[in-house]
Amino acid sequence: MVNFKAYTLAALTCFAAFSAQATERRSFAYTQPMEGVYEQYWTAQELTAQDTYAGQPRRLYVEGQGKLGAFHGVLNLDCDTPRFSTWLAQSEYLSSDAVPVEVINGLRATWCDD
Image (cartoon, rainbow, N blue to C red; front, side):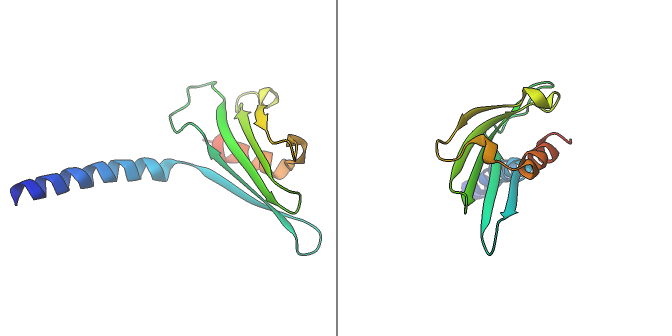
């Protein structure tokens, strides 16, 4: 019985630590209105869950689904110098030009305004 309590306590301690890290992970979502009843849904998650060093760009996976079609891209978001932000990869169907300015501004607000 003592071992069970010790193992349970250890498991709960590990779970609490992992849960705390999971809640700190940021994500982004935006619904782009389209004509009529149509919409385009945009989401983003950070690919690396580790802390970024000062001046390091954040690597984000950006996805779009909806009226315009599917978009998948990896963005190096440079918070210090926005013009140095670059798309490392993007889908062939929709280009990064289809990503609306509201999404880019939302990504900057989510990950750069600490």
